[in-house]
Amino acid sequence: MDAQRALLDELMGSARNLTEEERRGHKEISWDDKEVCGFYMVKFCPHDLFVNTRSDLGPCPKIHDPKLKESFESSPRHDSYVPRFEAELAHFCEKLVMDLDRRVRRGRERLAQEVEVPPPPPIPAEKSEQLSVLEEKIKNLLESVEALGEAGKVDEAEALMRKVDLLNIEKTALTLQPQNEKVLMLAQEKKMALCETCGSFLIANDALERTQSHVTGKQHIGYGLVRDFLSEYKEAKEKAREEERLAREKEAEERRKQREKEIEGKHRSGSADRDKNRYNDRSSRDRNRGSRDSGRTSDRRAHNNSYRNGGGGDRRGDRYRDRSRSHSPRHGGRRRSSRSPY
Image (cartoon, rainbow, N blue to C red; front, side, top):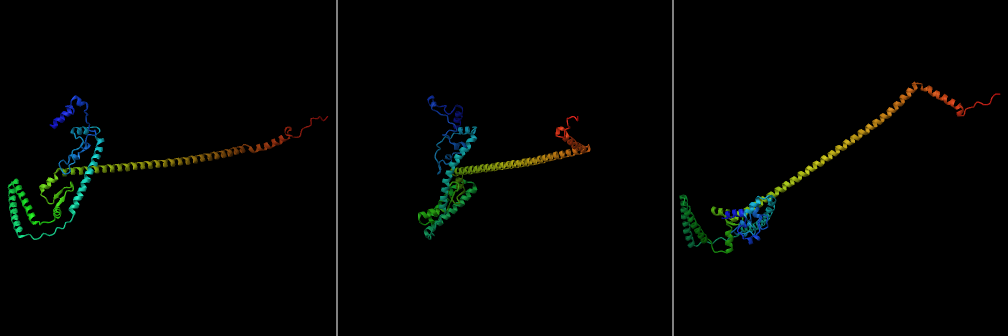
């Protein structure tokens, strides 16, 4: 019926049975509305885990709809909403586990209390005879249970085992002497164990059937799911933080290497520029020195050529011309008289 209703809702919409007037005020629900349970969308809702148990959280105040969950899983925004829903669920589960761990600690402290039970007084003769009769009945029943078990009559064997349990209780009542009620209760708890997963008290060395019944119970499985989810969530967060840290270190290392390369490149460039400048300065000095040497060589060559070509006679001719110039009228020499001898 539910499957057919879901199919009709998918084909015709959830408002298919509403009247026109009701349709006007009807609102189609989407998976990202506040009325929809994000816990149910992403993993599980804790309200569904402990129904009809001691840890019952009551009904969830939000909507649980398989159709909306399918819509969420196929939505292109699925991956962006999963971290948000998981973080909210982890926060809710952490509060549950904190309350449970407090209960477990109290139970552990209660079992750890040392109770001094006074030694029982001797059993009267009347009770001793009754105990002997009970022990004989228990022995005969256990033999019958073993025989029925070998014959494959499991139901009949279990019925006899229940009688054995009753006789054991009667036997315990005969052996116990009237004592303080609190002391008896604590002495009874000494024979109990505590489930670390769900905080329930168990009878130590209890029958395998009852132990399996507890392990497969709704409360034990529910708290197991909650603890497993929290453990996986924290491991994933820790892994993500570690990967982010390694990525930052890798990026910082790459930036450091890049800076070293840039510094080395600048150093090489500066060395090359200094070498080039030194080479240019040396070349310039060599060129200047060559120019001066070339000028001196040209002067010596010109002097030598002049000397070989009679340069000394020219100097004598220059001195002669200077003396002639000094005697010329233009240069203030003696002037010949213009007067006639006559």
